[in-house]
Length: 139
Image 1 (cartoon, rainbow, N blue to C red):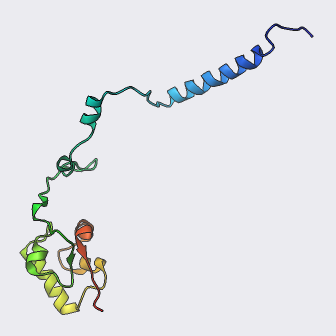
Image 2 (tube, rainbow, N blue to C red):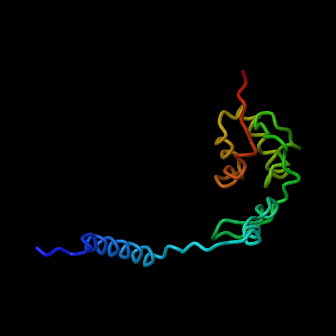
Image 3 (cartoon, rainbow, N blue to C red):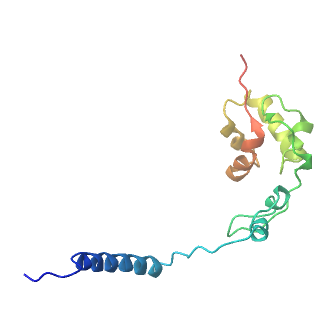
């Protein structure tokens, strides 16, 4: 066997080859290469909460929402007045009255999803109202 002045050289070449193959794989799948950003670039990345209301999920049109008339606290479906219900988005005088009529006819709402049983309120509207409405049980 022949002695070389650099016995570690074959091992190093194998490791460099494996490393370069790994980098080539990462680049081929399209991983972005990190770029440095200064603070001005970062500031333009963030949006204010008022701008966030106007941003719609992909595939949907942006619909500006006026949140100034929303209730400050959740409205109880079993105790909400006509005025409180009308402050909910998409609930006007007619739907507010239907909710009250449903409550008087069928008794108190037992679950939040029962709101979908009110004529004119579908699954989409129920999901939109979920964070703004609650159902408190009588004790």
